[in-house]
Image (cartoon, rainbow, N blue to C red; front, side):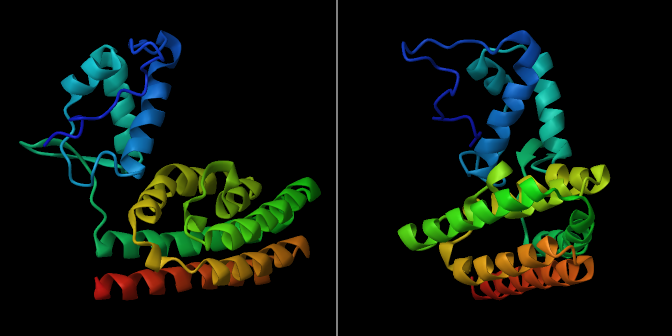
Length: 237
């Protein structure tokens, strides 16, 4: 089944009439919609993508859609299979292990570099963020803790604070949405919100002290524990 079947068009207005995305932002708007639908599972893993149907549904020409699809493919969310076409990527245990191994090394480096570059204002923002996460866990029993993203994500902010454009590109562009996809679609039993929050607090304390060596070690250990948990859950599943 193609992934566009029975999916409501996000460009529909209250009146029910479709508004075509404005020309200058067509590919960017399409990119955002496609990424969110893949990450949240509206477009299921392994599903075939029908570009003609998407072009019809979003009321756009094939040009902007093709550009958006190329960018989605570059993010690793879509793969092209010979004689089959474009499909939403399926995250195998091997792929997840590879992603987490790379993430452990790169995010550890980002935490170290953030100690040198992060501003006091950014540190204060992270403290507020963790306080918000604590409240969130208490209110909803941690059900959605690992599904925060964008500027609200603890890891994302630290990566940005490294001021290293290559690290930001690798982690926030190439790996970030794959990780979000797994987090969003994985069983809630894979989560460990209270422990994760405690580890985040320790990492932030090291960054606040500008202790790059400690921050890197704590970040690597934090991600390694996440990987170990995921691997054990996948074996059970």
